[in-house]
Image 1 (cartoon, protein in one colour):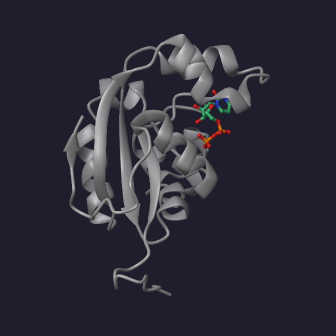
Image 2 (image 1 turned 90 degrees about the vertical axis):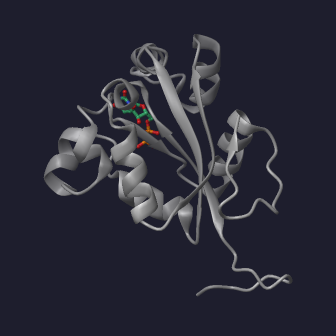
Length: 160
Ligand code: UDP
């Protein structure tokens, strides 16, 4: 249900979405943004950036002990990424649903209409990122954009 806050606006969530290097270099940016908007999200901030090893390792610190970590960092630093703050009711879970499972090969079979099915390659090069919880979303939004005021309105769109 849509809750009303004291100023009468609806309570909306923010999540962090990222088009990873394979998505940017593969020219999927416009198609993905079209899906985002058609799915009812507002893109309230966006920036394109090139991650270096230090920043990529920091972003994925929870995976630093995993066997795939070094490959992941190499992939994430292989080109520019487009980072966006998406806003919508239930944005965190809905964006995760829209991108589909981590393994893009599996996504093509089980979630053929997902974004990862559309533009991902495998369990590493899966084209997009989405925060997995509200807490992750807050951390990841701060990571790329600093503190965002809660008054950031739908439709506001800063070029950073
Ligand atoms: N990843 C990988 N190999 C794996 C699992 C994950 O290279 O076996 C990469 C992949 O790019 C994934 C990222 O590490 O998106 C983070 O993994 P996580 O399990 O958090 O998946 P996500 O939340 O992105 O679906």
